[in-house]
Image 1 (cartoon, rainbow, N blue to C red):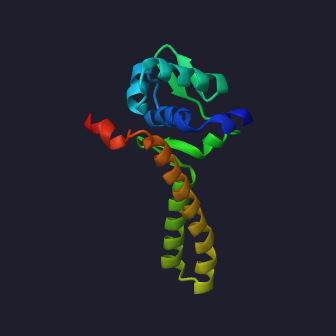
Image 2: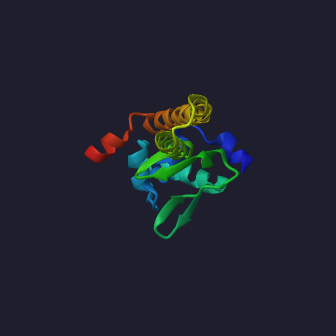
Length: 150
């Protein structure tokens, strides 16, 4: 699976993110349209490459993303129709936990500051990975907004 992390970039990553975002099996033409690829044969090529790398599987209903724990792509998860880094929900939980603890326990400011540092780091890394995923997903002019509108 280390090989997969090294070679998933560009259009191949865009196709993988489409599979992750949709969270259901997709046909070749649907992947072509959602990923903004020029032809069904190019979509099939990328889908077959993902299957070969162990990042997708082909079933009777189409191709679906597989997330393996030892893949770098496993830092992303399909959530509410979007592809987000796993760090974002963790950062949100940490922020809520810190706010509730601060409001109820009224700890010294130093304790809040110490707890705020890892929360801020979670947000920084989560947002960096989120921007990277969005850049890959919108590469070539395909965006979620265009998908909804057309």
